[in-house]
Length: 303
Ligand code: PMV
Image: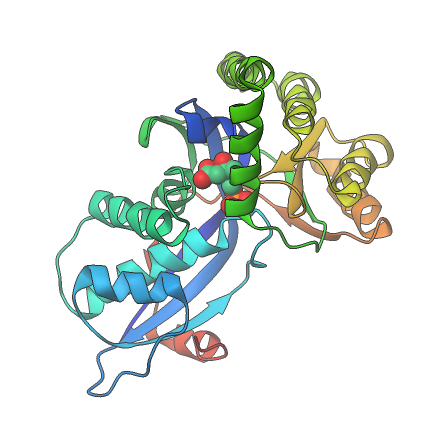
């Protein structure tokens, strides 16, 4: 039996634009997904297309148990974390000898095939390697120094479909390229400018995250009123440096960058607007092997 876990992620900058080869910056966060894989003579049929693809790609069969601290379909990379932890656990249990870069590449190909080609490498790379990564063109451009960022995530509890949101932006771009392409260029500029102020959280949040949020609104992915409510609550009532949608939008979550002392106040403001708050920080580890007694935790949910 092998037990592995992998973290979720937030996009600090560049979601949607990364699908068109632009840079994106994403950070691994503390909530994790735990996966147990066992060699068994008669493995049960797996129900999730992600898990099915993982076993298919690795060319083996086994049973799999999942326990997730991450809400699914909420923009926090839970499917990537499940995929990365599952591939890592299969690799370990069946002694296949793949390294971390190969796991990241395979995880990306699983996501791409399940999401019909519409998946950047961001979620799977961040979940595999941890930390803060600058991603572009399907590859890690740079690992950014670990920052002491205090984040409050606000989950709208409105589930979204990443594939559908990506498709919506694609259609908008096909009909109005003269509008959408400059927005994608502006998101790229914001992402690149943010690198110059990475140590200045006030500027990073208050200027660049906020601008990135407005650009996502312009792309049409801010659509759900709950997102606007949570962003406004985090900024105004809570005193965040800045706040934006994180992930595909149309529901899902927002992320607020905030002073340490304001975390609880911001979480309270989010909960006051019917959102679910998660106070979190960076996870520098990425995918990791867990002790076997994790089994008690992982056995709770079976897929
Ligand atoms: O909502 P999430 O966590 O699936 O993030 C989607 C981010 C997109 O840029 C919209 C798509 C992608 O594959 O990067």
